[in-house]
Image (cartoon, rainbow over all chains, first blue to last red; front, side, top):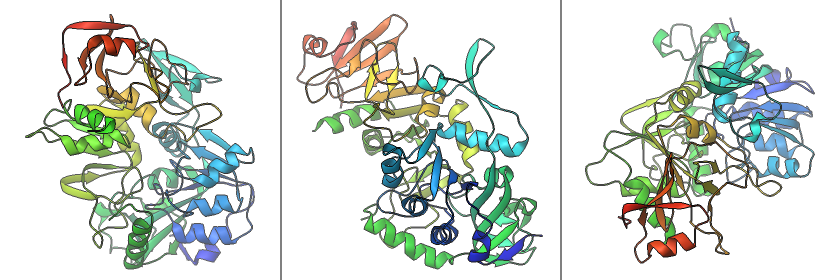
Length: 238
Length: 217
């Protein structure tokens, strides 16, 4: 049974120096309420693990954590959309570990799936080989990456039932389930919280046993307005 | 027609009906506007969608429908959405027929550099390295020469590589070249240019195809 928390109660679980994973892709499908609340706390020295970074165009989602200097290290595939990370990375005050997108996703999956490594052809013949074990399988070269785990995963769904089962919409399935597998504590922000049974079993994207805390975020309607305005302001729609 | 449009139009000629395609940002993405008549491709967004459609009109966006650039998209009939581990299994596992990616440099051995200039530009590789090793056909798209006239189609890349020996076709504003076991073969030159002019502005050693022709746009 997952606990239902307020946003503030949920972020109290995040402490200085923790490794956190946040779902979403460039802000779409990101747990914005929880990130905003985390940006209000003084929590610092966080390691942030993500596939990519913030929504391009303005300080939004995890860009706020970086702007507040709460992030010590970023692990992911891309920082080009987040000027705050680039600035601190160039100044040497924020460490970045670049891992190709498919690899970082698979490392997170491996972390939560009980696997000991990811063995991938991506990055062979590049600088990513430096300091990394290589394997040859059937004559083909691969790089070996260790699994990635975190203290806390913050995921984002459409609906949660009171057992923690999560349903997703659109393109936002993303990294939610693999992050829910790979973290000690899993906090899910959702638009709506419903009774067990109200999400059809075959519509559950993340099984409730993986989710510890549920937080009610903004409604779908409110998020619709927020993103429409954001996309117009940042000239992604005309 | 500017050089970006020349490259985008020529990329589009490589698409065959029914292909699964993943297009990088910028010029490659523009290629979807120039598909030959009767050719339909299934476009993939690496954040987890197949068969996505154009940008929605104002008032019609959905906060949960975004593409790999964080911009709003629509889904076409027959679209599917899925997790990112599946999306990259599709990419790395050889289930994408064709990809076109912008490049800073490429060379006659099929190497490509498109993710960093040490000390100047380091946005990260995103999904590019996975696409380069996984897609069945890799198109490198770039302007043939830099602003000073230096060739960006080289004997050997100088920037950190994104992947080694993976490019199949190089499409520039001046030429189309195929990477083969024997070397880089010049197969087309842009309208208004001669083969000699292309050779002169190219650092890579070019093998001239016997049937070299004008680029179809």
